[in-house]
Image (cartoon, rainbow, N blue to C red):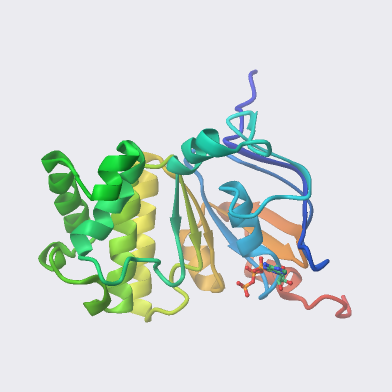
Amino acid sequence: MMTKQPLISFKNVSKIYNNGTVGLKKVNLDIFQGEFVVIVGLSGAGKSTLLRTINKMHNITDGDITINGESITPLKGKKLCKLRSCIGMIFQNFNLVKRSSVLRNVLIGRVGYYPTWKSVLGIFSPEDKKKAATALQRVNLAEKIYARADELSGGQQQRVAIARVFMQNPKIILADEPVASLDPLTTNAIMDDLKNLNREFKMTVIVNLHSVPLALKYADRIIGLRAGELVYDKTITEVSEQDFKTIYQEEGAIR
Ligand SMILES: Nc1ncnc2c1ncn2[C@@H]1O[C@H](COP(=O)(O)OP(=O)(O)OP(=O)(O)O)[C@@H](O)[C@H]1O
């Protein structure tokens, strides 16, 4: 039988920051297309670091990461841009252009599809404007299309960020604590939006979360990090709540 090729593969990946802090320690991990993976772990365990090595916002110091079998480690310039155009990112602080309209923020998702001069001048096609309106409908924000981004609540801003990622049409979505600052109702709306992109369009989603109940509710697979090491990796059907004690044990604590 042929084995499926992973979409993203970490091979013995370590990341040591310039100041000597260990971000990741010999991580081996395969992620497959269409998975909804949640990464959990204590603060400082390396969750953001792991996520950000996938689009090379952070460079690794040892090992290799491949996407579709191809090493991303040497990518630079145009090839790096191409990699980044197929990876969407959702941040805890939303990362919108605050003084721009919601529409313009969503259109930014299309920038990778335009020649640089057009995107610098902000020239977008009528088709893309229509698509942006549809993207905003998906996240229930159609009526805010002309509002300024900084007039929106946190939850609404995160939904704009999701509409922007939808416009980008990426293969992979990295979400770095997307709901950390949101109330429970908004949290579920944002997580549902991510799950819908995963289910409808088979986008591979990797999310860092602090909440175990949320991880249990949304993940297909849960990965746990502790002090830069991968200490847990189970599909949702194998997970038991007892497991989380291992992940959340402080380093050096008595086992
Ligand atoms: N730019 C940096 N320079 C030096 N050390 C860093 C840098 N970024 C992160 N670290 C360190 O690397 C380790 C892993 O950090 P990381 O942000 O990946 O953890 P995390 O699990 O995402 O934490 P949190 O849940 O608090 O966001 C921590 O010890 C952190 O202090």
